[in-house]
Image (tube, rainbow, N blue to C red; front, side):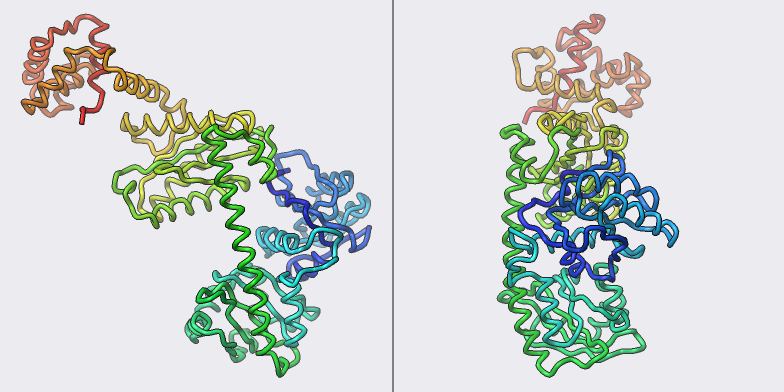
Length: 543
């Protein structure tokens, strides 16, 4: 089980209220041995790699198991006094067996329709909990509850209501008791959690979105039976000049009421207050999360503040992935481009690990992977990082380097993983490593040599002044003696191989090596002098 997925138990709703929020378009009750008034105080996702367990009052989403494979989760939920379990079923036979197991375990069972997506259930259930006031379920439901607002608007307009954000994602909708009333647009929007693109294209063609973007007035859309669209009304949810979303009212089996326009205008103003408050709270929450994450990665704060804020288990394994831009042009790209890269990293890593956190510390991007499965390995993390670098190149045309920090036993040692990720990125730049993603075992030598060079760069007293003079001589005379000497040493004294690398004749290289020895007094027959020359001549030229 992923503790990071648990909603804070600051409020609760009844199973009945949850079903009203989700609607029968998404879930169906298969068993409710304790009735529909059981209290739901949190939500958790059950990770198939972890032993099944739950906490009292939780809604448990069993994402990794279908049908009979959900039996252990059901029994654990009953044992731990969870409120309800949501699973996907495979056919009537398995459904009956799973329902019987849930009844025996004493836990409610909801089945998610096969075409629905888990993320929409998570979002809608969390929104319902977030909108509930602290205290007993059903007491003092606040005016800003989007689900209650959708239901009230449906009553006032005699229609079927859905509320969307500015990206056309469904935030809440009213419950319809007659599935025949629901047209294809509404059904597909709810099941897909977003309006189907073909229908959205038609609404754009008809100028609906243009009207909503520029006007506070209600707009009517005629029925189009050939497209499966019934008559509907729409109004923008606005805060000043900004459109926050849209309220849609679809006509059902009876005509919309005469005062639907007025009811819809009022509902839009109430919804605006709710969305503004939610945005403010989300912004404050994100700011706090970024502050705590930065403190943890820098080692200035311990793991407990972040763990408490997000519900993380500090004893689970963790790791850090680091990303840097592969070219100077990418580093100096506009801020919008950097935001797109961060968003791309966030989306890709969230698909792999739901608890992942992403932050940018210029010019690098870090991914904290808390509470990893104990069975995970570096190869898996390297694959995740590789997917991100390939996606950045494919979609944004930007080269990214990725590093995999060490797996650490708990969140408190995450700074060690971040430091290792930085060491790898530093070495990839200084050593010109061609691979896009690396872990420490991949480039151990390059990392250590890079750190030795950093030491030499910071301490002039441990450098050989003869080699420093050779580099200065080249700078004054536009020579290549230092470069030629390094190529010769890198090739184990193979003149022909070094000459080919430098694109010069072997005799030219032999002359340069003799000249370098004459100018410096170096004795290349001595291993210690060869070793020091190989290191010091790798230092970047002084600026």
